[in-house]
Image (cartoon, rainbow, N blue to C red; front, side, top):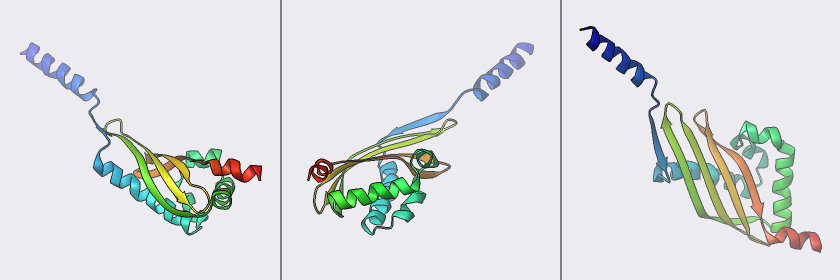
Length: 150
């Protein structure tokens, strides 16, 4: 009887100390969820509502890049590359772990059609307290070089 009680006790300790996680990669549901954030982001950029985009950024991003710098990046992109006409999702990678150690990471790459020069824009996002936030935003375009050499 003591062996059975000891076995049950040890088994319950072992099970309670385990981490139970489900890992999902590139699940359509996660893609839809993150795309709703980036779609909103691009609509705000298109309408030049830069201030409204600030709530989409992670506090960790804002520690490094303040909102004034973010606005300058948006303005420089509009001036140098032209206004956004359309964005086409090229790559979407999602990594979601649900359970005792949850993590939700997303990487999206867009080909952005602009009036002067097109750009390739990379957005890294992460779920923080149940809300997807932008951790990094990178704009690449030959138009930046063309604009500065004129």
